[in-house]
Length: 225
Image 1: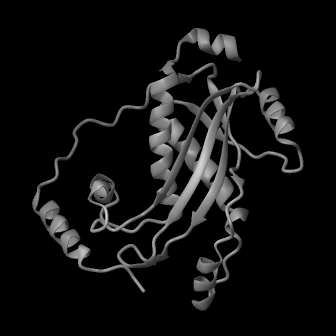
Image 2: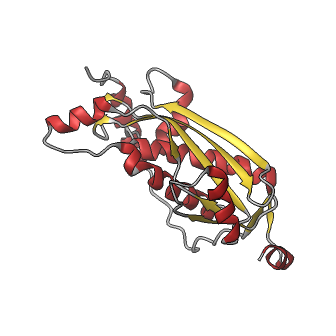
């Protein structure tokens, strides 16, 4: 059974108000992000997220009923989340790259290999829940729900420089008015699990940069490369 639709009356009202408000076109091009050195490192590697989340059999079955054959999410979502995380870091000026690793190597060997490639830090992510939206942008039988943890590690010393986590199941505005800002930022839509993850990435990257980010200097490049 889908979620109550009365809340979408509010969505329509918000949309109408937004449509009646003339948009201001920016006359200035957006400025590129100021290059940032994050803690002790200038370049950050983001390998595919480790996947310990249960397989989303409910979503897979719903797609099969529509004639769609969906591969296990772990087979493609791990690298996709790494790519999205790298983009979130770049938007804040951090030199980040989504990278591939040898799955047969131990975690220690993977980190060592990335250090040999010149990466000063690595983001290690662990997905603990990943449930895809069942429905559309405007109506769902089940909303997206994700939970993951991340650490930022110095590849030379193995020291953990930062850690954070994200856990959210999208809710209708009628059930939690505290989500109003996110509701508006998502344009009053039900988002996919990947888009929900990006919400977490942006918040965690903001926290990371506020805690350990600083404008990059020429000396940073000389020391780390």
